Length: 412
Image (cartoon, rainbow, N blue to C red; front, top):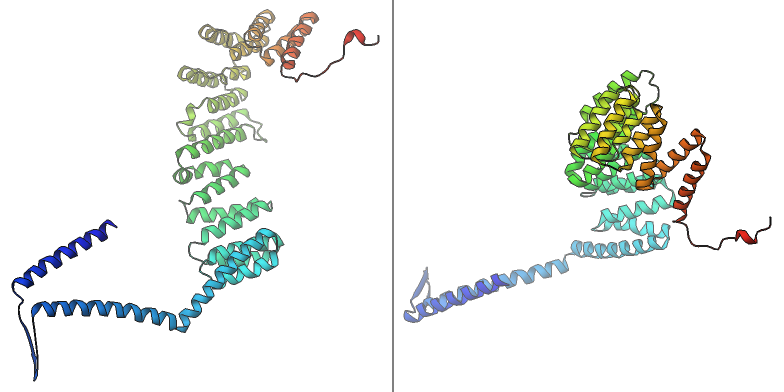
């Protein structure tokens, strides 16, 4: 609008200046051709030229409109497009109503003649899928892929149909090819990552992370990456068929080197890796990892790793745990771990003190269970029963208020 107003103002200013110039001196125009002469003032000649130009433009527009209206091919094409749009709309409504056969016929017609063929073919494919006609489904998806920018959409739809049918292997093949051709397509990369996660192919998912980070953004990709590496460590640590603990620990250490630097400082990641090392007899390395991580950032998931360490003396582990208790008195995770390590050292009284402190500080269900078991082993059934009652009372606090029988009225 502003540009149009500026053009109008500029034209008025130019016309005013031209008029004043013409009024000061009308000028003279003489055109001679053989015996033909044309005499006129300059102002009249300029006005005639402007009118002739305007008339030419208007005449051209009118002739173009008449040609479009009268030209039979274009008129037929417009009529077919109009019919195709109506069929696309009707086919979609019929698909929603469940009239699949009629909807499919209308949508196929709209795909052949309409100006929205991709939408029509995809909806026709949905009809064929619901009817269970795999041959027609594949034919419609191929037609959709041949449309402009339809390759990725058709591939995604084929992959989703395969997942719905319980065929993740077929979906994976389709998405793997699409992911290579469209590395920036967010939907393709996200669905491919979902399929890899569903199939628990953690190695492939970790390899996909750079491309996934570009497509989904750092935050969304980071969550997937963390889950993938945790699962990858879990898979290798619990992989069956290993009889040599040393070789399995060596493979775990090699895998740990491949973990991204940021994740190697994640408490859950360190706890899982150190826990497997402890189980495989590398307790010294596990203890070192836990201590370094706790110095950077305390996390209650790390102290329990010491429970799995059997190749170091319990006395040495208890010294470490007691040092942590001086820094964090009353920490239930450290107290329970210290109690279990004390049990390994056969220090029954010390273990009892640790479990009692944990139960008193946090009412931990684990602490109560360990304390009750220890009392029973020591032959103190009264205290064991009292601890169990505390546990039952703790659970009872979360139960709904309901009528209960009165012991006084029950028959003996």
